[in-house]
Each structure stands twice: as C-alpha cells, then as structure tokens.
Image (tube, rainbow over all chains, first blue to last red; front, side, top):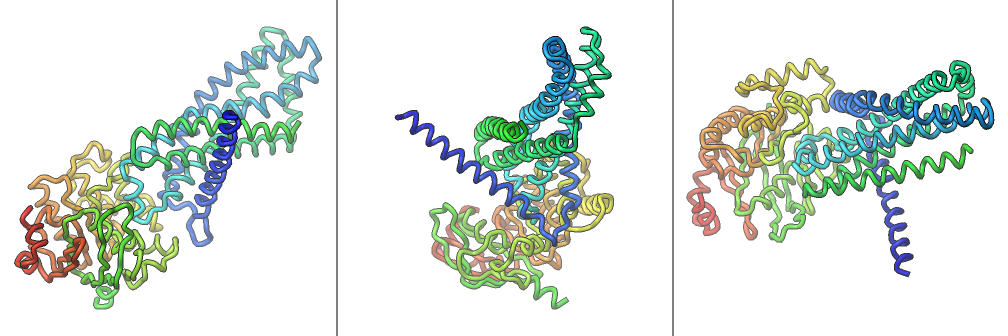
Length: 260
Length: 249
C-alpha cells in the first residue's frame, strides 16, 4: 500500500512538473511578439556565446565518442548481421540503430552531462548573487536574455552534433569492418545512404529538435529555480540531469512507437 | 526644458508598497519627488526604504494607491511598455552586482545593446567614452571579480547612465566603499545628478553628500512619513525618532 502511495505521489509530482515546465517554455517564448526586435544585439551575443560553448566546443568529444562507438558497435553489427541474415537486413538495422537511435540519444546524453549541468550551475549562481535582479532593474527580460538563447543554441547544437555523431560513427564503423572483416564498406555505405528518405530525415531532425528543446528548457527551468542557497545549485543540477534523461527516453519511446 | 522637468517628476498618491515577507508596518506615501533635484529617503529600516524606492522606481507595482513616473501610471504598464519605461530610468544598486560572466565593458554596454539599435562597435565606443568620463583608469575588459569595490561601483554607475536616463535611482551607492572612495563616488554622483531627478536611499552612509546636494529628505519609519526641504531642516528637527536615528551617525 505504501508503495502505491509513493508511486501515486510521484506520478502526480511528475504531472505537475510537466505542466510547470510547459508553462515555463510557453512564457519564455511569449516574448516573441510582433513589436519586438527578435534578435537584438545583446541577446544575439549571448546566443553566439552559448552556441560556441554547447555546440562547437562539444564537437571534439562527440567525434571522439562517435569514432569509438562506430568501431565497437557498428563493426560488431556488420559482422554478426552479415553472417546471419545478409546485407539488406544489415543496412536496415544500421540505419535504424545509428541514425534513429544512437545518434540522437548519445548526443543527447553528452549534452545533458556537459551543457545542461553547466547551464544550471551558471544560472543558479547568477541568480544567487542577485545579478539577474540587477538586469531586471535595467529592463532586460530574463527570458529574453537568459532562457531563449540557451534553448535555441541547445536545439541547434543537438541537431548538428547528432548529425556529426551519426556520420562519424557510420564512417568509422564501416571503415573498421572493411579492414577487419573484409566487407565491401563503400557499397554498404552507399546502400545505407540510399535508405535515408525525406521522411526519415524529417523524423531525425524533429527528434533532435525536441531533444534540444527539452534539455535546454529543463536546464534553464532548474537553473532559475535556485532560490538563495548555494546548496540548491547542486540539488537543482542533479534534478535537471535526471529529469532530462527521463524526458529524453520518454520522447525517444514515443518516436519508437510511431516509427516502428 | 520646462516640459522635460515636469515629465521627470515622480508623484505618488497614498501609495503603499508590497510588504513581501516583512513584519514591518508600512505607511502610505503621498509625495512629489522634485524634478532635477536629489531626494533622499531615510529611515531606521533599510528593507522598508528599499521597498519604497523600488515602488517609486516602478520596479514593484504599488499594493494600493498610485505612482506616476514620467507621466505614466506604473500600475497600468504592460510588459512591453514596462521594458521601454525601464530604459528611461537608471537604477544604481550598491548591492546588486554586475554580471560576473561578462567583462566590465560588456556590462556597461548591455543596456544599450538591449534597448537601442546601435551597432556593437558604436555601443563599445560610447561605453569607453563614458568610462573615460568617469575616470575609470583600469582595464575595462577585466571581469568584475578582478576589480575592487570602487571600480565595480564606477562600472555600475556607467551601466545605469549609459542610456542617459532622466531619472536616476541610487540604492545604497556608498555601500562597501572606504572613506576616500566614498568621497570620490560622491563627487561622481554630484556631477552626474545635474539635470536629472535623483532619488536615493543609503544617504546616511555619507551625510556630507546629502548636506551638499539633497533638496528633499523624506523620513520613513513604521509610524511616520515626514518630508523636509533640506538636510539642515532634517538635522534640526526635534522629532524623537529622527533624533534617535541621527544619534547613530
């Protein structure tokens, strides 16, 4: 009975959390009204800074991970599938596994560990020190200056890094397989690319856009939820990481159901 | 010129600030902050004074009554109007710090970049010129953590006035400053208050500044709100609450 109580309590908490998060995102986006200059120079400057921090600086680690994941996973798959079912199934499986699943998910996890936590810590400390309040006194909107640039840069970084991850993983997977198992890597790669339809590309982009929005929104929401104690920063950071992973997996599950 | 000074006045009618979590009693405030002059709010409770100052500055809407700043009712402003309104008002806070992740120059440029259509270079030139006027002899690209409290206050003043506001609010401008630095700060504020309506709290941290520049002193306590025309008349009053406050100086 106690377990059911706990479960019910957690479900209600998650429901209200989702509502809070959605309201936070809608409120942040509501600054984009017709009278407003969407990218004023102050906001644009923050957006570029964030894009460099979350996107460009993460390219090396994403490529490095993709290289090893490509060698470890793709090459194993190539070998197993080639010996069991043949090349056609192998290409299908690679397309589904790497392009639809591994690329967005691994990139999402890297973004959570690397950028989501950084945003929470940065915003949390900025808020504790009263720096956000002093900007509000100058008429600078918190959502405009802090939230929207971070969500946008997270969205763009997630899409580009996932593309980069998938490409590098496929390239190294195929390269390694052709070297070790003597498989026609070029032919397999060409077949794989021919499988990439507009629909699958749209699905890939949509999934990554959603992942980016989720990670960015959760990070900003928790960063600005810090009240007045430094200990809350680490608590909010932990919460943001857990909730980002939960929402990422739920969204991924949703896509699996509708694309299978 | 006359029109500008009329616009830059602040009028309140039975205005009561939001008390937040304070246990203090608040009295409703009816007054006119004189245009082109310095008005100082003094009293025994800093948090109470700050609540009144933020209400007069339009940061917090009044819980009751009306506050009219620059000819606009603060309560009637929507989000867009409020942002535009804020760009016409400078707010210098000795306690609310600069943005630590941006360097000094960027902190000064920020309001101009946000509220105007000036290019990045034009804004940077404007900010550099302002910093030179304010006698900032340090590297403006240093981060706030690398500067001392007076240098940070110079940057805060530059950030407050970069949009050339008609009204300037000073929230404890002498906070965390040594004796010599207070004198320097008073000299800068004296220079930049000319032709501006200035309203401040924390003036009792440096009474000489009030003695020189204040044209109106509003004493606010839990029981009383009293207005004086100068520091001298405030200093000579026999009111026991004021005598008690002055005895701590």
